[in-house]
Length: 538
Image (cartoon, rainbow, N blue to C red; front, top):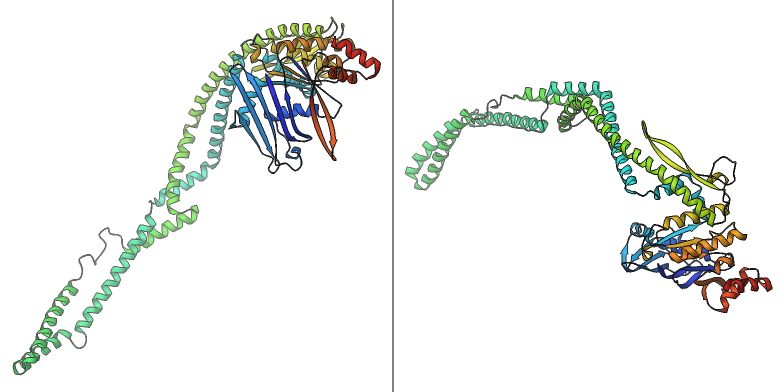
């Protein structure tokens, strides 16, 4: 039950608060006063979009807030619309929530029936949904959805597999060419860097050999350094005997001669690893290998490590192609099993739909009789078989009716008038709510000019039906008919006012004589209007 609704700074509404009662709450007023906009605000609160331009000029945001009373307790829902960004925020019991959450909650809170609902009723798809909503076993729809999803999931995997196989098959020749080229060279990860490093080491070795020979030349040269040092050492020895101060110099020259002689021996012998590399890779072989790798990179237009990984990818692709037939066969078996399960559910569901259609048709006719339709009117469902998988048909119900005896059945959306559609909608809402639920758990019914296109005796029948519905669950009713407004448990009048060159939508609760005045206005005023108002109030 919707107990309280407050709207602030939305379009022409500055601040409106409505406290609703159980039973029937009617909203009346002149055309354009803003009655339907109040219901639109409820739709916004419960998840519908709204343009930021509808925030009242000069205000930062608009807000709609409602208090619902449910069996488990009170629930407060608030939604705010930013004038700057157009974004909205939803709060449930003062906790920030999501629009998805409020949309999921909506079906428990309100059922909004309007002229838009009449347009939906003319849609064959919506008619099929109506029939499905009256199935006694709603789990059939869930099982159908799950079975169909399972079939589609297998079909999607099969499609992707076939698509991949086809793509690989188209590339097979090129893949095998790449594989052959890679196998011929047989590159290894980081091989190029390793070869370049070896190449550098060999060149450094060659350079060291040249330096070694040059050093020997320096020692022996034209004037043999060792012979000269031997001579110098001997002469200094003689000098030192006569002049002791040269004794230290003589010792230094002799020590240097000995070390130079040792160096000569080591240079002649050379380092242990100065010869050929131990792995046998000569500079020519390294250059040749680098050339082969460079050619392979040019052919395949990839880096060396990419080519090494490409080899594994090619092997995997070709292996996948070889196993593709087996995988497709396995998926085929999965598809058959999923299709059998879907077929079994459809047989059960279609049978249940036909049974529900017969029963629902009878109930609709009974409701329409109460709403002023001829006793000869007939309603039935035709079934449109739709193949959702080869050989499997989903029977979708479509509303047909025979308004006059002797005529063939016609689609409801082809021949029904606006007034007839209004009553059809009212009949369906009546039936949908009559499921034995706890009255406190039933959502609030919102009827926005559902009485459009009707009058006379039919109007009285609609009024009685609405009264019966209001006795079962809370109702908000927008109407231009005093015969309907006179049924209200609580009456609100919506009016538009201009104050200081600004327009405002106001809402006032009517009581006592003011209800009679409003009913008289709705009836056209004057003596006749007052008479009808008095009659209705009695």
